[in-house]
Amino acid sequence: MTTVRTPPPPRLPVRDRVPSTEPNTDAGGVSPMLSRLAAERATGVLIRERGTLYLADGEVVHAESPATPGIDVLFSARGVLGPEVWREAVALAGARRRVGRFLIDSGRIAEGALQLCHLGSLYDAAYFVLGPSSTPSRFRYGAAHWLGPLRPVPVAALERETVRRRELLHRIWPDAATDTAPLRRAGLAAGPAVPLRQEAVLGRVDGVRTAADVSAALGRPAFHTLVDLRRLAAAGLVTAAPAPQPPPVPGVLTQSSTDPDVALLRRLRDALEAL
Image (cartoon, rainbow, N blue to C red; front, top):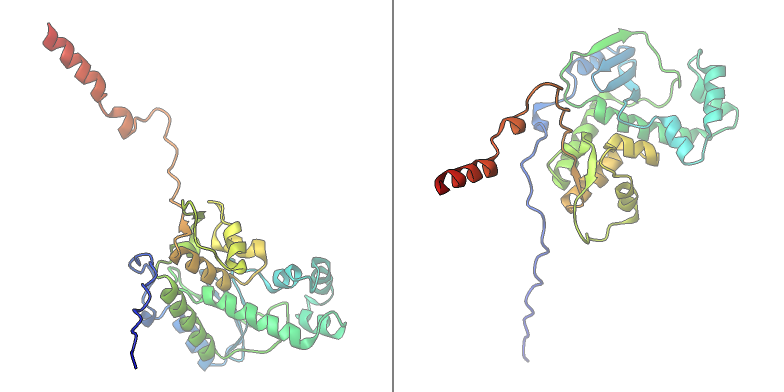
């Protein structure tokens, strides 16, 4: 019996990974104040640089961040509840902090569907709220969210999920520039085929939009968009656009305007040597 050994296939080429620009997840990034509030079973709103966390009895019940679409946007994008339904619910029940219960009791949405989308929106926003911050956190006791009481999330569980998501993004592509900067397509003549989900994200990349803008345009959770963009960056299809240069100040000479005209100097030199 003759044994035929087949050589292994060649490894697929990959881009060289750049050094990570993200903070070390071991260094924390979650708010020490949040842990203290959980220990004292506080109720109110924690205000951080990139959003807010609402607490009830020391557990997180809502999260909001400008980097993520709100729960109303997510429902509207999927055609579950139109914007007019949200406006009506807020007008009738917002002052009593019972918008969620109003939507359920009026038959606009099933309780399970609202709970599921609410948890997804909470974890999505909390990822950004609990990111590294350059400003102090503030807490306002007694504040409540307009959506009203829904399923709470323990602080420890929220922190674990936040760290898990950071580590996932780092494994996909360690450069965090595509998370916040305006995005542009890489100048590839023919890039690799991508799944339909990533193709939709790539279609919104125009050199101006950021990841948050793409999420809002697609009506998708922002963290999911970060995952797609990191994968597109790892494939060499998307990069962070360079920061725009400030326009020159009138009447002020720039470095380029003060540089000598080398070609003119050479012609003058040649003319003098010919004399």
